[in-house]
Image (cartoon, rainbow, N blue to C red; front, side):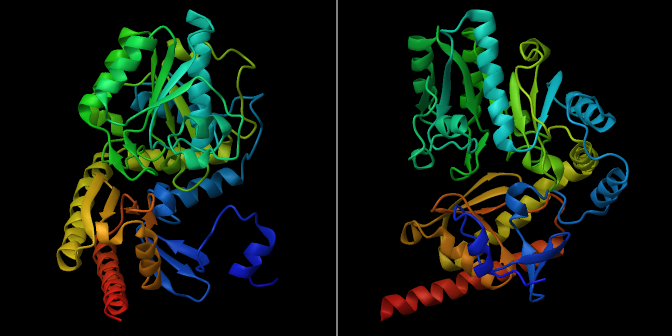
Length: 412
């Protein structure tokens, strides 16, 4: 067997990604090792996916046991793992019904199709308008890039689905004006409690509550994209719990499987009833392997110990990040909730967040970006304190090196 290299990746993979040179081969907890044996502290969490770190024993055990029983049946038959996971999700949330799929994109696609179907069935085909928000990200299908608020993701993929309007995020007045003028046609409002890919921007409580109120007043549905914010990421099982609102439909994925691919669309019984037999489906959705692992992950995450520990770990990280910027003046704000953290670079580093990611990787800590101006952290919800401290020390070293190189370049 030939050794995988970054160059061999380019020979066989489509060029839609630009991975770094590091090729990880093993993970344990919040540590990762590459082909050369170099160790990394993982502050990225597979983009908020590895909520229990790498190779958690309970998830490995659940997957291994299920792998010896049943892998796939398709949805022509019910399975015990799918029903068990659906029951857990319904018992833990606002929802009465669950649809399983394989990713956040699919969960949002199903959510929006369900919203359109509900409005069509109850009010007629004219009520089809989806309100979305600038800078939002909901996935990569044609419908989701159309609803997403980042035009660069839509370029070159037209014609795109229509009857979608975008408003400024956190702008209650614009929302009210749109409802007042187009209320007869508004089908749904889709929103992220925290815009993750869009820069780790928190929704304001008044904004979330206004969406709920206006949807109620105008017979529209509130659709929450909790793909990145859900399953403990903010210290609640789902982030909307902080806002004292309940959606009609919600998409969840990422951390739900703790690293195993799974997505789900949750909804009330009233809304779900319009998904009659044959209206939507997924060949792999709800497969026994994914549902078994997700059940194990949910059992561990949805506990006071883990959820309350998120706040403590956030405080440690924010304190360390603030100390770094006090020394080097590189971050102008630290945003987000729980362990979804966005470090907004100062004006002098505008557009260069990726340089911090690469410098961090060079010293053995894995981070993310959220746009060109935000360094993003989304570590395991149970990352040990020792790993937080070491990761922050390595990150500080990366920033020190980057700043020294910048000073040298300026002086020369």
